[in-house]
Image (cartoon, rainbow, N blue to C red; front, side, top):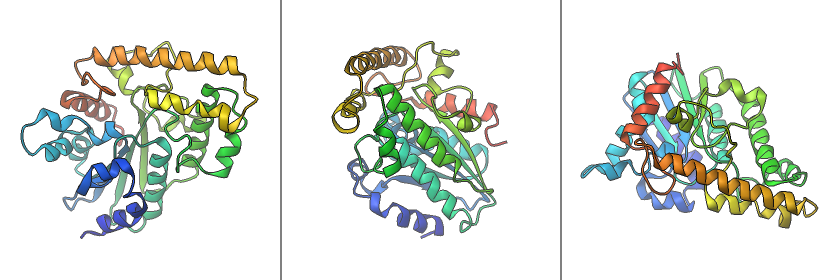
Length: 288
């Protein structure tokens, strides 16, 4: 077992029981491709980064083909780097933040000259009322939330602060977004790409603000009135929930009309979609 794999297994031990990780069986929460390179490229994310549905496009060696065709693997080949895909379906932004913080702790131990990290953040709110958002400071901020959109902003700002507090000279960090708008703090913006995945497909900014696209995530915001701030304006709350649903539907309509996405569920990118995203990152020289 390599040092990196051993360290990853130690870091991931507590997360192996997560429902979505268990479903992946022996794979666990990461893919690791080591070729004895001096650089390491890491992608952190959810099902989008994992390469969900890519295996459906192949008749054999499906899991290997998933790894070989996800955008992270294509990037690692371009930068002549070992590859770590630290991701699994349905995870959330706070989990991604914790993985990055773990990497900062491990950077000095790892025998790589350079470590490139690309985080694909997902919709805001998957974290609500889970084991991931129990920090007392974050929960105190929840209590000040006046509406669902305000709560999403609270989450984004808190995550921004945490990310900015953890850096390492060996790590180059770049962040991107898949389907939703960028509402992270102004201080954190220099780490982001100019376009999200869906903006790349549209080749322009979306005029509306979309923060959530999963109906199961929208339901989590309903806990605001029950658990965190019962004095929040109920009319504003209901209005914003309806707006969230409408905005999510518009995004889905666009996603499903694209030749680069699958036509069901979250509309995950196809092999062509992952290739397009990798080309965009390479053209923008994200890691120099």
